[in-house]
Image (cartoon, rainbow, N blue to C red):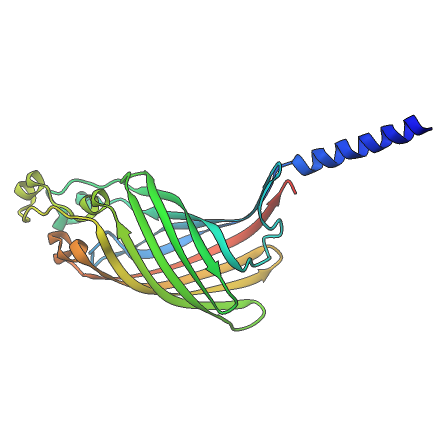
Length: 253
């Protein structure tokens, strides 16, 4: 009888340990469309894809992060994923860019740290162009939050975009070869603060795991981004808008 009891206890501990070791993840995935300048400094606006992936909780063995319930809003300090898509810039589509090299579409991935409170939040993200420009860019921001109803949250706050020298050269520089071909003066763009602006956002809970998120932003080019002969042909002020359908997922918990 004692042996049976001991065996059952060991079996229970084994099952519990296995369950504890089973990995789990909770996250929000969103996809939609955005309206933005055709390229940095352009007067023309184009629609393109946009999306987001936000990690809420992760369990791997003894390591755990966040909450298995993606609907729980974490307060205080926390890590966050960072993602951005940048459309391509092709001279064939814009006569004013004739003579400039094309710039491939880019996907930026990275991590950030943020602080979340009931009425405000702040964050700092560092991303790298894993596809496209292959350089670093950082984004700083803060938002005031207003819970207009149980389902609707409104946000508004400043945004700063800081790019490396390579990032600035990709989007705002003009090489000597490009200068001869385009007629624009050669320009060796350097990194630093490239845009400063403000963004207004809304998040609406559609019920269940579904949601709707939208943003409207306005930014002013700064530093070498504003001094570039490329942006001098268009506008140094840039507007953006986006709308996404989101869904929360919980896997493995």
